[in-house]
Image (tube, rainbow, N blue to C red; front, side, top):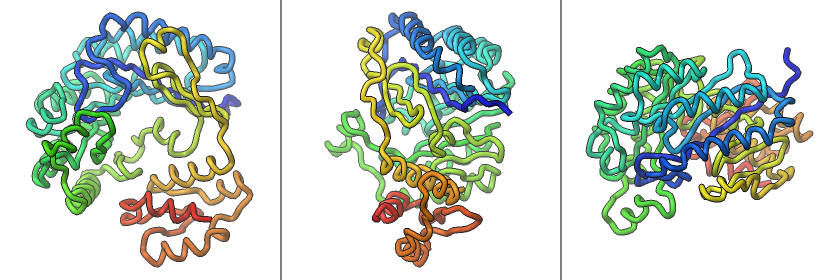
Length: 377
């Protein structure tokens, strides 16, 4: 067994063809002029970590954005080659690249495969043309389906798509149709997220002006329950509130976040948690290119660690490992939180079984409230 410590690596690629109406990520449209300088800065940032990386083994690498599939695939290949020169990759290292329909080609897919990318996450969002237009997406439903089929034909077995529900004007019939079209594709994983209207986005402006009407809570819950049922019927089991997979194809990278593992973020706006220290890079492209790194460095307090373990682990269907809580904090969680646990069990929101505290299906719908109750010491 390797003595090297496991590490998940996130690489942010902040370029896109057009900013989506709901997006509050650090992403920049029309900046082709910065691509070369940005990837040079990424390699320099990797080099700055060279000494510390010798103690680690990469268990997952995730290229997110933005739209990493927008630029020539040789940029991705070069970044991976450079990273491999600094630390070993696990034999089964999961290497994910986010891709948008309309930006992938057969040639790019071949380069990704050659570079070692073994998982694609394709941003479909919807199979309804009107909803895609309102979201500001640049692809059609047909292009989305074609991108998945093209990737499968190129040899990618581990394929994931992103879907969104609770969209302005979205009906239950439209969501049902999107799910039906999704499960007809050769995919192993689906991330199905409820729309969150983020401050400062075009979507927020539409909602506040009344130009966009969000569905009510009952309809949102109906959409979520439909996804859980339909996807399970097609072999995609829910393993986290918003994520579903054929067993064995769960996202290892995202599981690192939910299981409180170490992860290093590279690129503008990337966040990290390494050896109990949190830090981030500046979101502004100019600041990142000028060499600013590791802003807002903070050591997690004991309270931070407790709250984050509880909040993140209960997002998963497996739940929180009570033995790990005992080992980390020297406390029997079931004993010290007996009052809250009895209350939540009586409401049918949690269960304790096999050494894990997990939320029931109803509890997962109310996860924020359940966690707040359990944080009440």
